[in-house]
Image (cartoon, rainbow, N blue to C red; front, side, top):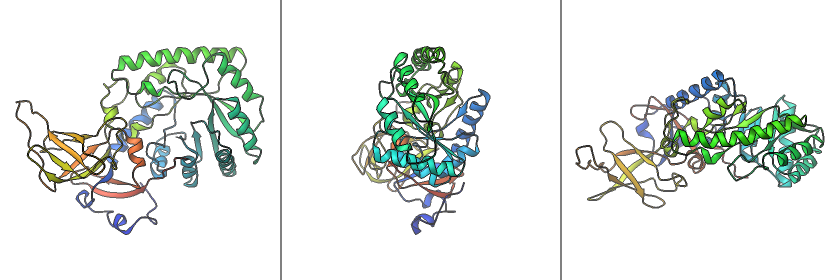
Amino acid sequence: MKSSLDSLPDALRGLIGQGVEAIDTPALVVDLDVTMRNMQRMAEFAAKHRVRLRPHAKMHKSAAFAKLQLQAGATGLCTQTVAEAEALVAAGVNDVFISNEVLSVPKLRRVAALAHQLKQRGGQLAIAVDSELGLDRLAQAMQLTRASIDVFVEVDIGQGRCGVAPGEPAVALVRQLTQRSSSLRYAGLHAYHGGAQHLRTPQARRRTIVQAAALLDDTRRQLAAADLAPPLITGAGTGTFAIEAASGLWGELQPGSYLFMDADYLANERDTAQPPLEPALFVKSQIVSVGADRAVCDAGHKSHAIDSGLPQVLPLPGQPRLAFANGGDEHGILRPLDTDDGVLSALPALGETVWLIPGHCDPTVNLHDHLIVVRGGLIGGQVETVVPVARGTW
């Protein structure tokens, strides 16, 4: 993979070509071999089920990984913020969907500028809307340019976050959309149920998405009866994409975490309808202190997000099984787990490397300036490149 190295500090640029052991800690490391397997499996799944694939770039926040996903068959990328969209467009990505509501007038002016920029090079921008005010402000902003923008009406299918209510409220908003300026093009419905993604059993996830699909199908039927049938329904996530694909309703999938995975997703019982996905994102850490009953590593909450739980310690061959406990901002406390025969495993030694699987990949990436990408595995591998993280919260 290619990444711009011009802006990298000398210390990071000097890592390229060196062994994994040269990476200082704490550092966010991507196993590229695993990443490519995850990417290929998802692309093959989408092709087999004849659905479009539009991954969420908010997970990796990187044009380099976005371009790999496009090369593997993705039709475009999702972002959640205008800044994330701007970073992708600046790097040459031509098909971006801001799958979030934007009401700020200054931000909408930036959206209009992005739409114009993409039109100039044959690309297209899309955005989600769930209110009449959102439509009004978007239409006003688009008057600043001759470009058009695809608009997906977001429908709340059970998450209880953004989205217009299904049924008649959704139909009314779509009708409003079609009566606005021709610069706003009705592209379809955005329907995502984030709350279903981490239900632990396939049965629980399936029940929830089946209920969501019933609301969505009723909305689709009402739209069709009003001659407003959605051209496309987009949504789905890493935990449920096989269910949406099988429903016949969703024509486009938006998984994000599938590329790297995290401890929270790995805690889900796998749905055999989905391809196997492996952890590819790790925090490399070093043991800096050892006590009688614990070892302490140098990766605390500044290195990994804890909104979805603490990280898991990856047990590499020959290493003990360890549990991670809260040690504060700069430290993690590692304690041995019982082995099968009831004997406690040994503690790692001072200076030894431990690898952590973050609880939640998206905000963990957002804590770091760079992703250090390795080939050949975490033992014996080499640094292939260093990828800047394009953080964008606004």
